Image (tube, rainbow, N blue to C red):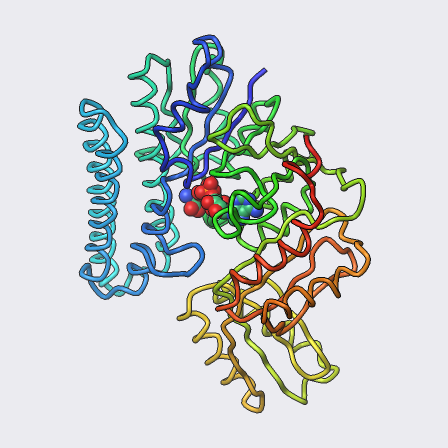
Length: 475
Ligand SMILES: Nc1ncnc2c1ncn2[C@@H]1O[C@H](COP(=O)(O)OP(=O)(O)O)[C@@H](O)[C@H]1O
Ligand SMILES: N[C@@H](CC(=O)OP(=O)(O)O)C(=O)O
C-alpha cells in the first residue's frame, strides 16, 4: 500500500518548496498518508560535520582525528551549530524555531561534552583514541539527520499533519540493535494510514552504518525500510530530474530527462560520485522487485526515471554524460613490474588502507595508474608510502577530471571517433581513455581545468544531436 521516499540533502535545503510540492502540495488530507519519508541532512551539513564528500576538505570529525586538543575541532563544531541555527531561522516559523533550536543545542552540547571527555580520557596511556574514532564519526553524522527530520516534523505538525519523528539515531539508547531490528522495532506499531513518519536517514546500529556503507548512508536506510516494510514503490527525490547531464553545468534548456534506465547505469553514476542510488542500496530493491523511481522533488506530477534490472535502451545510445572532478591520477612506472601481478595487489591494498577511493585504473606493460578520489593529504601520504616501498619506481601525480558517456547499451558505431573528435574540436586533449567490454561506460581523462568544457562538448556531440525530445525513453 505505501511508498518509501527519500529526500536528498540538496532538496531538503529548499524546504519551503518541498512543503508545496511532495510533502503537501495539492494533496487532500487522505492523501497525506501511506508514505514514509527518509530525510538526509540539509545540503552541506554532513560535509561540515565529517569532511567534504567530494574534495575531502576537513569537517569536525577530520579535525578531531588529527587533534592534539579541543582548539582544533571545537570551533568547527560551533560553526556547525551556527549553521544549523541559521537553517532553523530560515526555514521555520518563530514558534517552532525555539523548539528546533533547543533540540539541536542539546544534541550538540552532548556531542561536544563526549568528545572533550574522550580526548581527556585518551590522554591517559591506557585508552586509545583510535578505538573510539568510528563512534565519534557516527555520533557526529547522526546530528545532521536528527536536525532535518526533527524540523520537518515540526513544520508538518504546524500544517495539521499527524507527522511522527522516527529517530533512528540511537540517541540515549542503551544498547545498539542490528540495522534490521532497529528499523523493524520502530515500524512495528505504526499505523501508516494515519501517521506520516519522517525518518532520520542515519541509523545507529550494531554494524555501524558509516563503517558498512559510509557516505550516502541515508539511501541504505531508505532501501532497507522499503524492503522490510514491503513498500509498493521506492522513490528518491532529488533537486532535478535524473538528466542527460548535470543541469547546472550544461543548462536546463539543453538537458534531456531520463525516462528509464537500469541499475547498471546507476552504478556507474554512483562510482563517479553522482549518486543516482547507492550501489549497495539497489540490491535489496532489485531482489524484492520493488520498483525504484528517481523524481524531481519540485515537479511532483512528472513520472521521473524508472530504474529496473532488465531495462536496456531499444537502440544503442548514450544516455548520460557524467563526470568527476578533483581526481588524482597516481602513476607508478617501474620496469620491474613487467609480469609481476603483486604490484597491483599491494598498491590497491595500500590505497584501500588510506581510504582513497579508486574510481578507475589502467595499466600497460610497466606502469599502473590509479585514478583516486580523496583528500590531498591522503594522496600525499600514498605517494610517500609508494615511494618508500618501491624505491626504484617513478611515481607521479596528475590532478585530472574524468568525463564519461554512459548508456544501458553503448554499442553505438563510431562513438569513440565521435567522442575524440568532439573533444579535439573543443581544444581539449584526452590524457587517457577507458572502455570496458561491457560497453556501458566510456571514460575520458582530461585536465581538471577542462572538466566543464568536456562535459558540454560531449553532451553536444553525443546527446543534443540525437533530438530525443524532452525525455529519453519515457517511463
Ligand atoms: N545527470 C544528472 N542529473 C541530475 N542532476 C545531476 C546530474 N549530474 C549531476 N547532478 C547534480 O546533482 C546534484 C544533486 O546531487 P546529490 O549529491 O546526488 O544530491 P542529494 O543531496 O539530493 O543526494 C544536483 O544539484 C545536480 O546539479
Ligand atoms: N547526509 C549524508 C547521508 C546522505 O545520504 O546524504 P545525501 O542524500 O544528501 O547524499 C551524507 O552526506 O553522506
